[in-house]
Length: 267
Image (cartoon, one colour):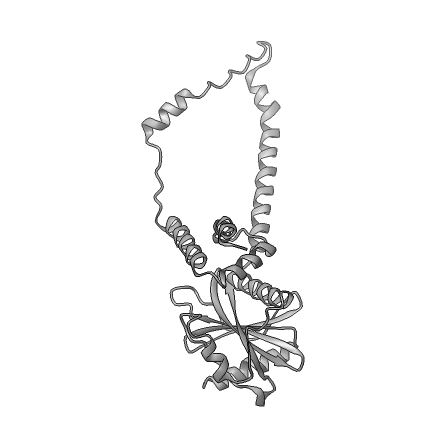
């Protein structure tokens, strides 16, 4: 992909409307092109500014009156036969109309309630994106950018590639050897991913800067399961950590506890 093709996809990416295949191709291009990455950031900033600062103008009464006057007049219903009292017409159609309106109201409420119940929470949305990024890296054979079991090699590799320094711990003694790291994208932003292993199972640890003004997701007391993958989340030292693996939930819990201990916290 070149910059010309990338520019055609950037607006859709900023609106989170790209499909998986196009998103993968674009992310590979963004990893090597600072200009397109900056343009994507500008588009996202513009989108946020429009949503937060755009004003809404309500039509003035005079304008509303002119529009109403320009609309075609409603057709006047034909007069009822003189032999039929008008109060009988009320009984002829009003109950059916009321019943129809009641059914429509119930259906609308049911649809709204169902949509609300099916809507992803921020935690579920992030968990889904974490799994998608994990699977995409495996399919694209892009699981690791820097291959090393030495944290003093992996940690400096991120210098100049991110605007924050992700902590890297050596947890081989706990049964989770470090195998490397890579750059990935979440919500169009570069993030650090540390790759560990439990036997033959990779464990991706997504390291994000702390939520700051954003509402942070709560730490999990247990793991989540999405598409057969185990996911957990915790916070430490101003960073958000999301770990995903196809190993067992118990192994992932032990991993997150070992990380907290290595960070100087409590398991």
